[in-house]
Length: 337
Image 1 (cartoon, helix red, strand yellow):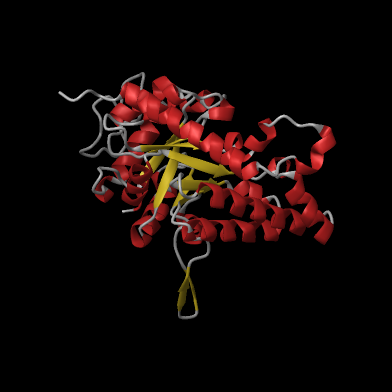
Image 2 (image 1 turned 60 degrees about the vertical axis):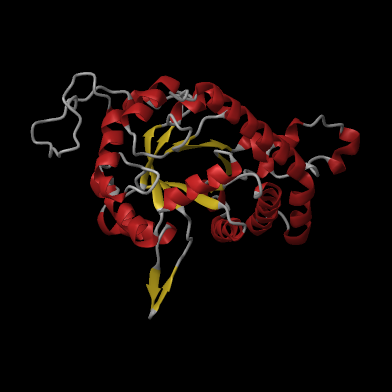
């Protein structure tokens, strides 16, 4: 199962981290961007070529120590058709390096449109008599706030092609609580099932809790050998109390944990999303890794060389993050009885 493969990659490398490939133009080293601007002018095509070179360099520097990458589709779409092609090439290159690829698209809709999104990112499209994978990511982030009919088409595709999804549950952004922390009282007409927690109608039942419960409920029949379903949850490190609560509640849900690093989340906070065995979660870092070269002291006299160490800088930051998470997980591990 898809999350079984991810967990095994994490275990093999002893590294529960995923690198977010969010290549905003300002994060690309000058020597890469300038080269492509000279070739194609100040065009979207030039920027897309620079992104691809940057991504390949990062993957080459990290594939032996990091189990997964997470390209954020927005940074590719903003470069138009050429950028979308680079997203596909990035996914293919990372998979060729045996990395697990989470496409961060936060897609959602209902019915046939949801099925089309799921076919695009996780499944196949039939052209004549041939089944083709458009993007072929291992997992896709989805927005669960349309309810189960916005998720089930993705789950069906994931089951068919051995993929997975991460549904937004308790996100890391500062305003998330404006909606996600609302107290909800579900009406009597709600369709209950045998897995429903006893406190569904409790006045303190938060919306994010309802979403997490629903995601685990609808994917209950897809549990893999490590105990996780095909529908994971996005749970931000910046809200550690909520993460700890959800971890205890959603025992069969694999967590994608944003918010570490540039967004202010610490390794100790991120560790709250792991189970007692130190499994069931992967922590994302984007800017802190891919733009680590910017932290090097810059002497304008030598600006031509600035950023040429981006691979070693990214690797150094990734190792630092890995070691920090290892220490945090060791400190929070349940002692053997």
